[in-house]
Amino acid sequence: MKSTKVLPLLLLASLAPMALAGEAPDSHGLVGLRLLPHDAEQAAQKVRGGESRLAGIGNYADLEGQYPFVAENVDVIWGPRGGFKTGKSFFEWYVELDGGDEVNTDPHTSKLVQWIRRAEQSGFTHALHSAGPTNAVKTSPQAVDYILICRETRLTRQGKPGPFKEDYRILYPEDVTALRKLFREAHAAGLLKHDNYKLIQMVEHPSFFAETPEAQKIIRSMDGVVYEAHQMNRHWPLKTGWSRPGPVVRGAQWTLDQGMDYIFYYGPFRFRENEGYREFVEREWLQEFWQAGLPKRHAKMHYFLNAFPHEGSKRPVGPESDPHSNLGLTKWLIGELRGEKSEADTTSISSPETE
Image (cartoon, rainbow, N blue to C red; front, side, top):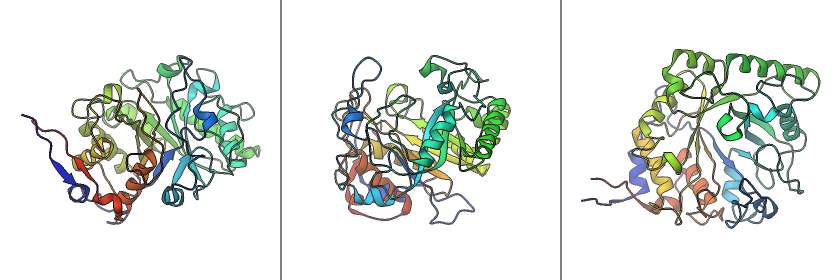
């Protein structure tokens, strides 16, 4: 028989692991948010297959003013700054987006340099890759804090995979050298504000990079690791899926032990339209990861939300007062990492089903 046990979030939170040794009890990492879709025009943009998969859930521009807590407290965003207080940004980057098999080291033609320069000069206008909507948006200059980078031959269907068949996303050592050189020369040419930027390796496998000496060397030449945990495709269900807590925790622990940043890039999420959905399953997964040993409060352990419609999910963008919305989840997560209790703490969720 399977049974469902209902526990208050406060009790579940008390079961989560303490911060790692050497970290102050109240230390915590950053909460990031990808603003997708940002506005109605971007939501209507056609994507692969000729359909608009971003429509029907609302957008951040139209909801501005209905998420004051998140606008004031989220740490880093990908998308137009709009009414967000933070000036920090992140974005994903694939080597192939520059049009070839190798890193383009010419600072005057590099699309990566153009992306960073645009953010620093005027701010991001959208949170999509390469070609995106060109409509006018409310934004302002942003600092580029994290570049989530990889080789993405499977998605882009171009370029060449990385050096490991176990995780094709990992860069070559020469890629990292070329990127550092590109930043220095772009800065010297007056194109960029800084001569270096944080390169966060986006991995596919949750622990291969941490358990393979050759991969470890490459990761140590970078600034951290980002792992994508979806509630879709092979990641579902959590117990037997690709994002099982054990390997994820091993990868995160190794990264933090090196003194580097680890980003848990979480989403997209299941919702009422998806088979197997249960209320607050998105929070439930986080509680499972924390109970398994994924650090909840650690200065270099960050949680970025990659929430957008997928596989028919129509989880709404907001407002933040809706606990089932993406903004509602963001508000709850900020409170959890900071140890601040709010009305969200009284919400109950179902614990995972047990045999």
